[in-house]
Image 1: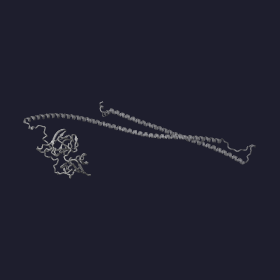
Image 2 (image 1 turned 60 degrees about the horizontal axis):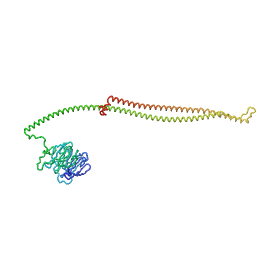
Image 3 (image 1 turned 180 degrees about the vertical axis):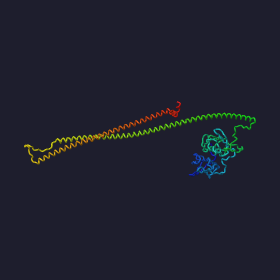
Image 4 (image 1 turned 90 degrees about the vertical axis):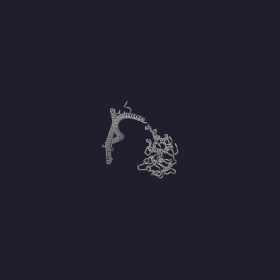
Length: 517
């Protein structure tokens, strides 16, 4: 692999873009321009092709080759350019010039123009899948190799890009330059960017091998006329010969014998062709019948699959509805249980409060009863004492003579008034005692009524608590019965599915080899 290029020039590329103008210097005599990430001049715009332009520098100037087919009406960049000519690629304007000064004018022949055949023109052997197919003489200095219309040497290989690589000859030497192809250009299995090919060396492009066979004719051999070809190259007819015998050089007897042999061979081939055609027809009929059978089986399988999917969807829908109903019922039961729990807590708090009030009222009643009993006892004692004590009386003169006479009439009147006042005070005390006794009995009667009312309220609270407990028990029983009913329904559904054979079909689909057991 040679390290030198065909010239010591580089390229200066000026890119006039929509946002800015930039200058890029390429330190080699070729540059690939496009939106491909590995391009020497990268243009990041969706309108720019991945591989848009190939620039080739020589001592004569810069030669450009368009690697894409422009839009209709746009000029195709292909030929010599100078630094004043702009090449439009999408929103960019490209100016290219080589480094150093150019002495030769731009009127030099195009690098892709065919030249008369000479000794310095190399021979390229094209081999597909390891077999030699044809040998071509490179009559052009620059040859684009690829699969598309823009290629000079077209190769019918699906793994070759439309413009795959460039073959350039200069001074008896041959270089190959990769154009950032999809599968790359490889030498001994390694991808290369540029390589000088020596005689008998080969490079691989896709499934095709390009071999530098040798140079053309010797110097003293006259060059034949250039023959046009589909690939725009000159085939070397001297090394490309037919494998069939030349019947024109045979004598008449040999020609007749050869014709007879050819006719016999033709008939044998025709009979073989007829047999093969019949076998092919039979095989085609068998394949058609097999295809029909497989299509029928496939249709049956699809029908069964659709039926199973429909049944599965119906079962899933039913179970989803049942689960939704159970979840709703469970939610209602939970809400009712929570409400009952809150009511039970309220009734328990109310019951506790009522019990506390009853105990407080009972304690107050006991205290009042004790005070009333003590008060009644005190009043009775006072009344008894007042009724038993005699009234204060002054001494009265005896009737007899021995009785002393009062001193004066005024003293006797005062004594009579004192006795009358004592009798009136005793009468008032007895009356007040008689009035207090009914009041005490009324208070006792009122306290007994309060106790009865409190007892009735306690009985009502106890009855309500019993009703709440019975309601909670009934709720629990309903929930238990709902769960038992759901379990029985699921069991009945499984039994029905087993009787209908749905369980077997489901197991055959889910468990491989279940039907063989």
